[in-house]
Length: 396
Image (cartoon, rainbow, N blue to C red):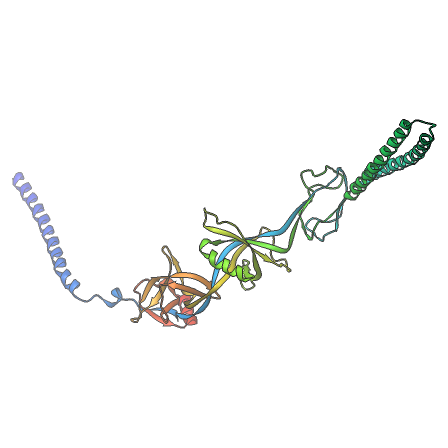
């Protein structure tokens, strides 16, 4: 009896499990049978379509624009002088403050003049002594000549007197040279600015001993009015640059960071005699008056711009329309069906909020200028005025 009961219990459990599996299979079959109906039918509108994206748009235009070369540059002093002492002595005084603007001839340093004054007096005394001896030698030479002519003395004595006179005359020439050198050394005790410019850090201070033409120098002076801006232009622009320089003065502009609306104007005054084979660029220098001293030696120049002619019928788009991706510049072009296409473009210049495009666009095409973050190729758009689109995007 016990065995029969257990058998029935096990059979009931197996029958229940089998029934559960059959129910699951029937549900799966019902689901699979429903799939073709869903795939063949229309999907709900909320799942397959999105509302048009509001964007600001503008049309491409065509006009004549200048051909500009825009590169980076750096400022260099027009001249640099390292001031050194030409005599050895003790530095007595410094007559300027570090960083001061000085003019040519301004006194910068003075050395202790007393040793040089003593040397000058010594040279003057040597001259006076030799002059007195020369006067006496001339008298003795005249006397010896007279005695020789009268036969009282021999000719050899006269010749000796004449030679001594000539030696003293040469000594006087040497004395005059020594006096001139002593005066020059005394003048060198006062060190003046060799040109107009801005002084740097004082390397040797008052009280120190300095040697003639020694290192370090006393101070450096940079001439900053005028001043140079050095930059490197691409090799392919060389023919146009040479053509403009051959015609006369060639203008150049320097744009400082944060001062894009205030370009500094100058002229190209130097073209290097060779192209750097490693970079394919050639060095140029622009000279700027720098009356307001906005340019400073060592300063980085964001943009150095040369104008090399004009480009006729150029395609112009607002710079806000140009985006940068992994493959370079592109713009969203609005097609006739109010969807957008991401189109690669070649941008060669940008000025005053407008970009010059040489490849990728045609005249009178519509491009997106605001609302790019919500776009993807093929997205539907609703063109809006710039202000309205910007406000809507900001709110979303």
